[in-house]
Each structure stands twice: as C-alpha cells, then as structure tokens.
Length: 437
Image (tube, rainbow, N blue to C red; front, side):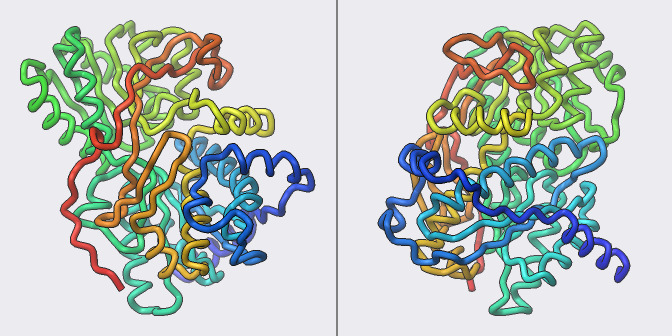
C-alpha cells in the first residue's frame, strides 16, 4: 500500500499542470467575461474580487491510459483550457490550478490517488468516468472529512451518472454537474414515446452500476410511457475490455430489435458502432455519449438519422461556447464535449465569491441552491441532493451544415438538436437524506 501511495504521489507531481494566465488575456478575456453567462453577477459585483491572488488547486482522478484513456486525456485538456479561462474572469478573483492522476479506471488506484492528493494539500477533487470510482471516492471523502475537521475535501463530479450518488449515497461533500441516468432516461423515453417506428428494444450496456441503472430506468420509463414496446433482449458486458462487438451485434440482429438503448462510452461505444456498421445492423441507437472521443469517427456518415444522443449539451450550443470550442479545437486539434467542466469553474467562482472563502465547507454551503444562467439556460444546484437541475437535449447524427456547423473529429457530420427538455421535464425526485456538518 505504501509503495502504491508513493507511486501515486509521483504521478501527481509529474502530471501536475500549473496554469499561469496567458500573456494575451487582456482584451480577449475581457470580451469573454462580458459574453459568458457566468453566475458572477449574482454572486458579487463584477469589480469586487474578494479572494484576488488566492490559488485553488484541483486534482482530477480519471483514466489516462488503456482503452478508455482517450476520453480522460481529452477531458484533461478541457480542464487545462478552462482553468485558464475562468482564472481570468471568475468573480472571486482566484486562480485555478489543475493536475491529473491516472487511476486506470480502478477504484483502488483512485483511493491511492485521493490519498496522494490530500497529502499534497489539495482540497478539491474532480472525477467523472466510472460511477464505481465515484462511489468509492464519496465513501473515502466522507470518512476523511469526518476524521479531519478543518481539512475537508470537496468532490466535483463532472460525468458519473449513477442515480445512487445523489440518492442513497448522497453526500454533503459531493456535487454532480452532469444529469443522472434517471434524468436522461426520463427525457429519452419521453422522446421515444412519440416515435412510432420504435417497437422492439434491445438494451446493451457496460456491466457496472451505470450500465445496470440504464437498463433499470429504461425499462421502467418505457413501461410507463410505451407499454406496447417489446424488450427483445439485454446484455451487460465487461467495462472497457471488449475489443470486438460483432457477437453482440449478431444477437441484436437475431432478436429483431429495431432500436438499441445504450449508456456505453469511450471505446465501448465506438467499437459497438463500428461492429454495427460492419455487421449491417441498420436499427436506431439511443445513446448518452455519441459525441465522445472515437465515436464520431466510428460513425462516419453511416449513422445519419438513426443515432441519437441525450445530454445536457451538444456541439452546436452557439454563443460563447461556440467561440471557445473553436479555439479549443485550434489549440489541441481535439473537441471539447465535457461542458460540465465549464460549469464547475463557473459555480466554484460564484460560490467562492459569495462565501468570500476557498474553504470547502463554506464553498459547499454557498453552492447549495446556487442558480445561474449558463450556456444551456438557467440551472440550479438542488440543495436537497446536490444534483444540478438543467435542460436536456435530444440530438441526432447528421451532416453538418450552415446552421449546425461544428463537425467533431472532422467527420463532416454533427449532432443536431431535435428536442429540448426543460428542467421540470428531466428533473426526477430524490430519496437523499443528507447529513450536514
């Protein structure tokens, strides 16, 4: 254990990315500050910088290697890029510094990484890929904070969507900026309800808490809204280990399914789509993560009009997001799709300005109930369970055009919004009984 801890500490030090403000901030970032719909105005006057000069260190613990590593690598670029942007325009006046530890998608490695980060004095932890990892981190952070008053750590969840994280496992120290599976399925099944050509559904998902929840909530939602739809099959496969999905596609075809519902992400979605194309499966896919690294390329033009994504954003949000996405692409030759990163920095800046502190306890109290206008409209961090309430979008894969021009992975294709679900539609109840300090 000691050897693993020491290794993780070295990883933290070697992976650290200290983000100094670029010399060209000036006019560019001043203009961005005016355009960005950040929560600054609600939290403090624009001129007031109560914490000017203070540094807030964030460590993101996520996979940077292996089959699912490319997703984490892409997201690390987003954290680097937007830490710099929001260091210049946040209303608290703090400077954000972000570093990264490769957890290899392992809960055990993640706990070692958490220990290394805490030993370095880090008080803010970010994570997103793998609800199994998120559950382990919540438990460890709860125990650490209880044993170490005055040295509390806050957990910023950008992508882990298991509903239990804000229900039975909810924690005062955890805030989720993505929409959970119950919210996404509520919106997805509301859309499917009106699709008369959806008659036979197959569930194919990763075999861990997230994939299991997709199946559970998906079945419940369809039974409630379209009881005529037949569930003709379901499979759970190992997370991040399958290299050939051809056998699964054969089973889907044999079942007669006209539609597949999957929460797969990373290589588990891109390789599934690749196998579907090669195997001649022409049914529809309803997904969470079509826009994520590797899947646009796997799709190409083959999925036009039949691959859908439910999410809190898409590639063609417009406004400041469009400008930043273009700049991000030019800088990294990559696509910014984890837009919850933006909201983490928005919310932290607003909460710290409101609390006039960077102490996690005070910042958490300021985050509770915080509402602000962001790139996808008015959002609110629900106090009851720390689940962000937000609009969701159903988008479909089709050719990019003048109205929807952003083309991920230079495919010439894009995700086009076909329906928006306001907060009250996608919001789902919580059973959270939160213990507060």
